[in-house]
Length: 107
Image 1: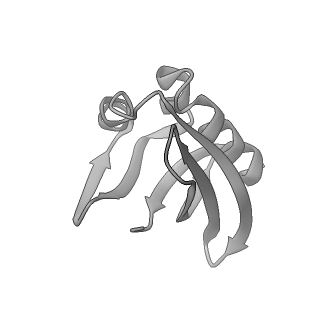
Image 2 (image 1 turned 60 degrees about the horizontal axis):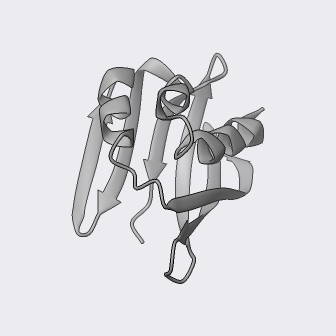
Image 3 (image 1 turned 90 degrees about the vertical axis):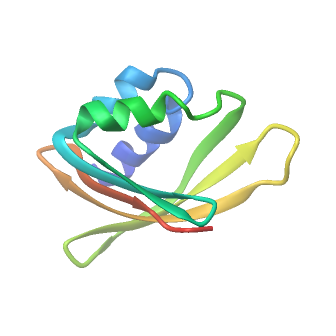
């Protein structure tokens, strides 16, 4: 289930932002890094607002997901148009089939 959820996230992120946000619990926590800044979003509404800013010319693919502690660790492949691919590590927790915590590690 967790790998499928991560696959859905990477597929929907640039195709259907609203559907992507529905993968998160209403009170979910989403953390990411942009440059040297850590950004934190709380709740599905704030997460949706952030996801709307993800450039549509970037493709994402889930690389792996495995159980770790009380959640999962994984990696996604970021494929920016015209730039070399890179990977981003992440940790996440799932509750009732939705992301409860989603933390993208700094590049």
